[in-house]
Image (cartoon, rainbow, N blue to C red):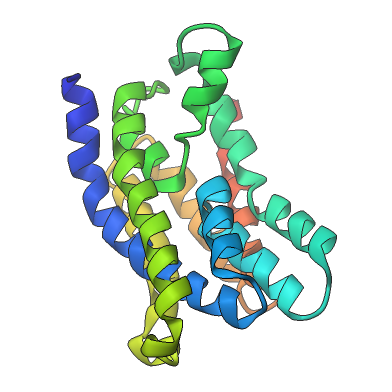
Length: 216
């Protein structure tokens, strides 16, 4: 097996554990909002994006309907457009193969695969996503079917995992001198918007910091 793939799997395991806890909470909340366990699991298996899933779930739970929920989730995932453009030259093969490989782009894997020179290790990207995907879907399964046993998930402090998760990614980028200005700019944008905008919008807006790279 490719060494970069194995290294990616090892690097992805800690993020998989965090994802398991976040998706466990999603599974519980989705079922309590009217989703069937199967619907919650399928959503996690197809979308595999915590911020988008929670955004869509909050809209549906508030009575907004499926279409506004999908639009909210799509808005949250808009950051993947910039990430996809950045990683596209590092993918190989024809359009179909590149599209399939691009499904491995999630926040931690994108950061882990970044080689610091504008290129990405595609095998490390894919390898790190594998355990994260397993953890995410598994957590949803447990949450969807064992929600009654878990009770109120807020008492476990799971709401702190998301900000801690993104703070960890920020710290990793700050170690790279070339990425440091963009990481700091993105962090400042997010912090400035937190008091005034709905959850998720600060992280989305922070991706505009990537435009700093256009100067190069």
